[in-house]
Image 1 (cartoon, rainbow, N blue to C red):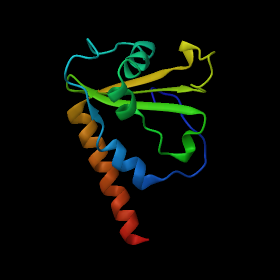
Image 2 (tube, rainbow, N blue to C red; image 1 turned 90 degrees about the horizontal axis):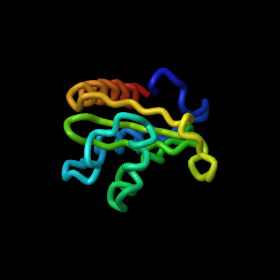
Image 3 (tube, one colour; image 1 turned 45 degrees about the horizontal axis):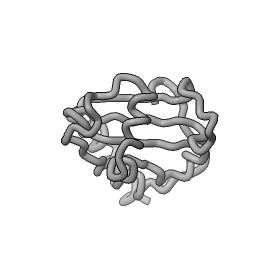
Image 4 (tube, rainbow, N blue to C red; image 1 turned 180 degrees about the vertical axis):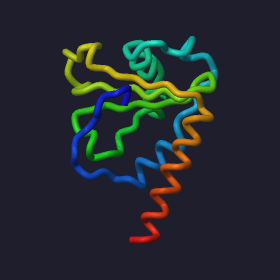
Length: 124
């Protein structure tokens, strides 16, 4: 993500992860104020409201041990932000990475990945 490898080489629960990635929380009511431009503000925005906090958590993949991954849709874009060891009070903002893509591009990427994954499930 954002040019960095996130996670580890352990297997993940693909079905659950794909389902969650296909149904990201829509935040279109202004609670974020404006589209976050940096990882720290995006991460903070996801914790600003209980509904956003719960809905944006992407904690389904086993390979994300020790990582907190959040994703949401806001103002026509998908933002995914992650940080290592988020439970530590010493979380350094520089450890956060973020990626934001237009919703249309995200849907195309997601649909292609989902289609490929479904084909592999039928073949196996």
